[in-house]
Image 1 (cartoon, rainbow, N blue to C red):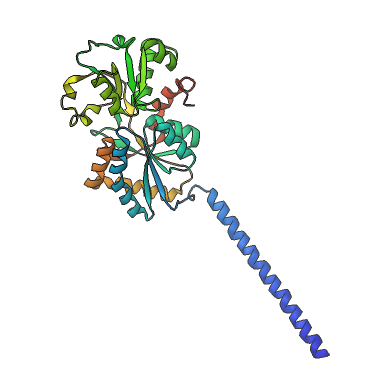
Image 2: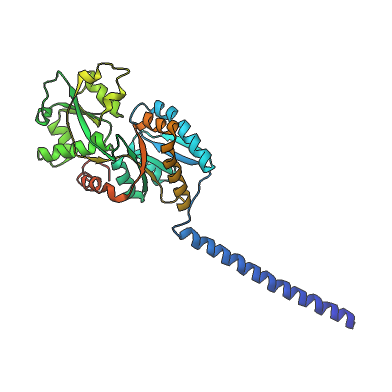
Length: 319
């Protein structure tokens, strides 16, 4: 009986010790879990997707962009160690919304699109394009050389073609310039009272072609979209004339969503910068957006765009 009692006592003590040990293990797991949760809230940790999605917007034919960017996506995937998919959105706003929903993680977006994405979804700019050795560019007004249009005043009651309202050089800066020049209060008044008609063409090249073919009187595009059309339209440089330019605009961006892990973002940034020494990759960038190089960028560089955008928040339906 004493032996049985002793055995029961020993078993009881073993169970108590096991319970205590289990409690300690549970506490340790809980502590680790809390550490993980705290870690997720820090600046250095975040999401690393199983597949990285890069978003582009049309500056030319969408199918052409989709085919052209595939080598770049493949190379980026090799360097990052995960699949990378390039997707072409319908316009700038679609890309901004996709980044806000974290459906697109890295966006090739122009200055205006970046400002929208920053304001609405805290998207971060990490890189910018370099063209002709510069981090800025101008928008241009294209008219037919035989149109008789010689000044901005001559655009009154004419037909205007632009890529879309989310385009920095295609819409935002030209519209701002015209509104200031002719004391026009809203973008809506500019489109309906200054111009006789407007067309959203879906791409800078399409806008230029509309003028070339006589379907519009003026196209506002990046400088100089005509060079992309010379193969198909050999006389485009003679047929279309640059009327004038806007002020300087910060170049396009490579921007990322706020959810991405910061160290992973740095790896993305370093990989893109390494493409400066890779002729094949720079050729891809040049074929898609006329990028000659890639450079680092900061939010402060886009202040002029933020100030210009402020004029449009309540007038062009982009807020």
